[in-house]
Length: 491
Image (cartoon, rainbow, N blue to C red; front, side):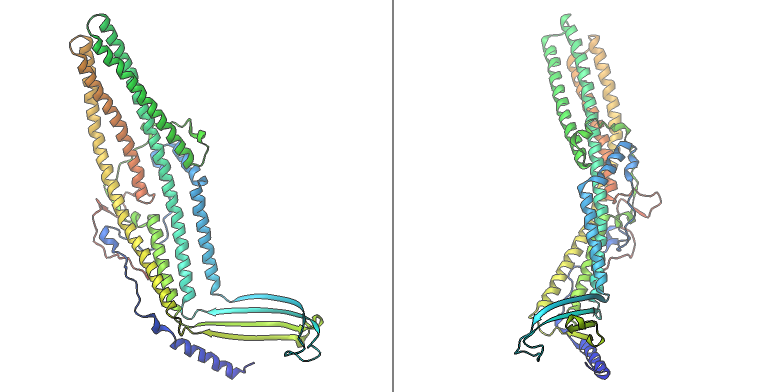
């Protein structure tokens, strides 16, 4: 056992060697992809930050049945369960990395029965005989984090855990949006079926009128055949809509992890879904808080920490191992004071020559960081693109709805006049058919535009990460860039 002076000398030597070793072999390796300037794309605050609390945004549509379906989906769908499991796995990795920086102590007990060779190191009476051997001791180990490797690995694990948390919230937003969009689609199909059923009844009444006029000699069989041909066409449309309705109900059952028959009676009304006005401005802070964008941001941060950890491998690794306990030949001697043993074993590993293994590892980590930063950069651009598209589309649909409402009023009035003239014998049947076709087209278009408008609101909220803009939020009109110095940086 070395004395105190030699011990100090050994420690000082280890520190000196650690300070001089290894760094030169890293070369001039650095990342080639840098985070974009988010301000250029109108995102004012894109720093890695805690996620905003998820909103129950579907309440804005004003349909309690939709809220029930989404709650069921969020609690039972396998995607949400998988997201929770991934988050738990990432959190356990953080705990493991955090523990690695602390001293480790364990108790060790051992009993053995061994025959010692007569021609070995041990003298008689041990040599050539069988003895019982016992050991009871505490063992401790501490790896000194002098160059920050364990801290970098902990930061990486934290980044991955936060990314998993963001993934879980992004999965929540995506699943709730998918349920809402399927619900709106079902409401559209049911409304279209109502239009088709009303058209069928209208055409049936018109056919009765044609028959009366044919019997009276006022029309020919040409008009009669035209009226009869319209009925099968409408019934075929109704049958096709019934198929679509059944398939959409099946989709809702699958999204909410329920049996297929559980949604058979679900009948949402398109007119009861509230259509909230789109804001004229897009809040920038919501773009920065999109869960999928933040997940990629945290992964870029984690990749940067992995690069830091890879750089520390070029420096020495210092471990201190110690033990304290009892060891004896003969179990009756184990607990005697004369059987005690203890020791401290400092160790240092120097990276002198590894044929480029550490450098290759660093290159790989830098490439992974470049990939992570590129993915993040792409997500920011795509988020801005998505919001701009949804806002433009929504505003256009609203204007189309206004014009379509006026057009439908006009064609409904024209149809009533054409029908009245036909009944009075003042107009041809062809005029009635033309007016009727215009009415049916406008009715279908009205349903489709209304459904598209509601679907757009859902897509707009999804593009903003599941948040509806606050009235006084920091915003930019039309997604135009703002004058800000906020930039992204990986540290």
